[in-house]
Amino acid sequence: MVQENPEPLSEGSQEFKLGALPDRRGDVDAKQLMVARLIADVGCDGLLILEPANFAWLTGGGVSRAVLDPAALPALYFSPEGRWILCSRVDSQRIFDEEVAGLGFQLKEWPWHWGREQLLADLCQGRNVACDRPFGACKVITDILQRQRRALTDYEQACYRGLGQILSHALEATGRTLSLDDSEREVAGQLSHRLLHRGVQPVLLSIAADGRSRHYRQCGFTSAPIRSSCVLAAAARKYGLTAYASRSITFGQPDAQLRQEHDAACRVTATYVAGSWPDAMPRQILATGRRVFQLSGAEHEWLLAPQGHITGHEAVDLSLTPSTEDLFQANWAVTWNVHVGAALCADTFLITDDGPMSLTPTENWPLKRIRVQGAEFVRPDLLTR
Image 1: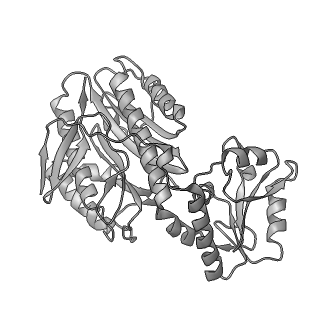
Image 2: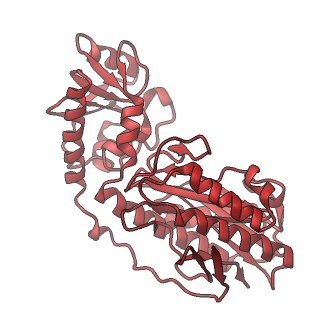
Image 3: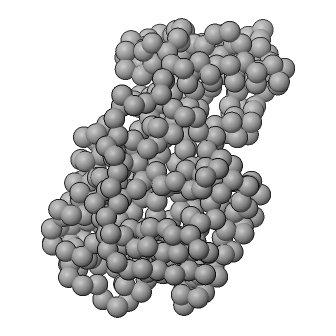
């Protein structure tokens, strides 16, 4: 049973401080031990990492900024006892200074005119090497690494909370300060500036003015001006992790249709969040949400857009559909994004043994209280300006 209280509320959050993070070096050292066990389990001598998401995961958030050519991206190599950064001589000093300083990595580099392939081939010659994607004669262990990567460590969870607070602040500050007749592009620029100013990389920006999202569920941004309402959504990356959230505003009281659509989106999202516990089955959560769509008079909306995904070091690590077999696990991150007409209600959550925890909590925004099976959940309401 879903019940709601439309009373506007404010949900405060503690300012995230980098000094409160668990030890990054300790996180990387623990992953070295995990990799050593994995190398032994798959019967190999070493592990080669080529995917950027796995590079970020195993370096505690290192990223490959400023490298334009995918064939020149840095890589990692692990033996049971050691770990190496593999990169172009052009990038090695910057990567060690800015991305992996003090993390115990050694260096193997190639001259820019050689290219990466020659170094990788030399490294793998005469060794039985596992890899996170097909490469030469390497043993591909993509699925094994993906399952390991989904469970977020204490360090990664702390980073996620910091990223989520920055993303929520950027969305809400933009929503509170944008002006009538601003174009969607102008608002996207304001939102992007707030993210980049805090060292967060925009991955996706969606600005939908005056019900445009009723026609396009994934709509980006255009030159259209904002006349009466706007839905802001963004996916953003920092510390090698990605979070996604949305906030919606109206100038003056919303019309009855938008009010009804937003309320329905909040109810469905609260239902999905309520089911986000360890060992939950995605198809059962989606089926429950579909019934709430039906009770809200919007059953067809379930078919028009994806409802959610497991996230983390990949923006979409696992799409959630009725055929998804993977049960939810503690310390996974999940994004629920529900569209109803012009409305969108989206946030990212951590699945824990104590229940779902918002990673993108509101900072200064009106809320709706919604009860699902006796438990209370809060969702961002429309901000009326």
